[in-house]
Image (tube, rainbow, N blue to C red; front, top):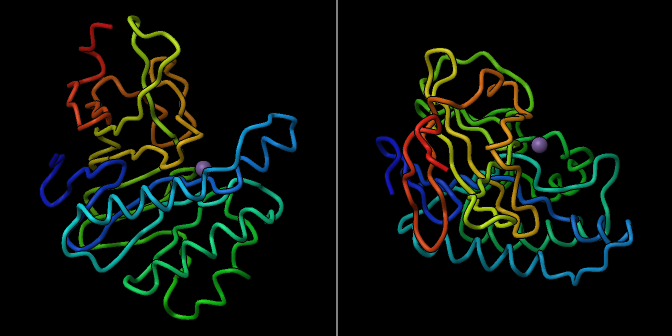
Length: 232
Ligand SMILES: [Mn+2]
């Protein structure tokens, strides 16, 4: 579904011309949960790689993949799982695409991995593409571009009829006089934070999301209109 000129939601990704933008992958989340005593099988890497390939296959002509921050989960270190997941993914992607990793607040100590890829993978604070300004969203930046795209927030929504079930969603609204698009997390483990609780992490959402449009991702994309008009 097109949500703006040249911007199309494809699964959990956002396509702009020959570029696919993907939200928080949070590799290493299972290892982190395992260490905390939560025993879940480690399927996240397989699942994420399969999802990425699946999304890519629906994109047609693609030259570039942009990861919009938090491709890893742990803050202060790189875990074994993170290292191997990220390496496997990048090894695969650089065969066909230019890869850009926008730095998220969890992406500390990524440089040693990324350095191995030379010019094929870049690691940046922000990425500008025509009139798009792509940043993780944990802090504010000044920009000239008309549309800002952030991750970080992991938006999802629940419904009264289906308590306990959350659906990932995209948000589209305004920040100052710019368009702001929030993309959901790409991780199957981290479904996200319920926007109905109206507690937001990103400073870009400090004024709330009443006038934001909600696009829910399930078997396809559902435009639920503006948040303030939701009757749920
Ligand atoms: Mn983040």
